[in-house]
Length: 90
Image (cartoon, rainbow, N blue to C red; front, side):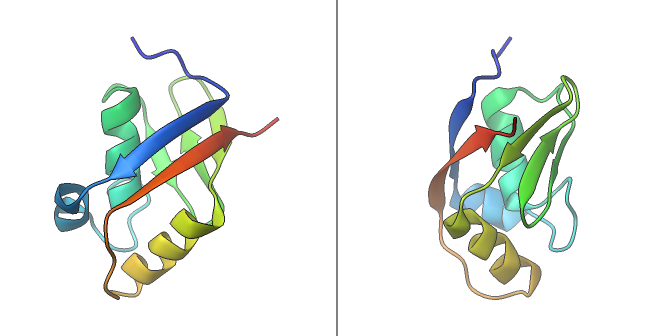
């Protein structure tokens, strides 16, 4: 079991991008990458400002680069793999 830390570094790969669904907070590339990192049993929802991890009720803030990635992906714009750190909201 993954211990949910205050900061988690996540990499969104080309596979996540290819399998992601635009406009779907559960199936976007960022959500797929987070779920892969922390465990598939967690419910992960990604919004433009934060990521919600449902299993333990944790909210994580997303940095500007990944927020822009999510905006571009949802608008069907070109995106490339990205690595980011999300921080637990207090």
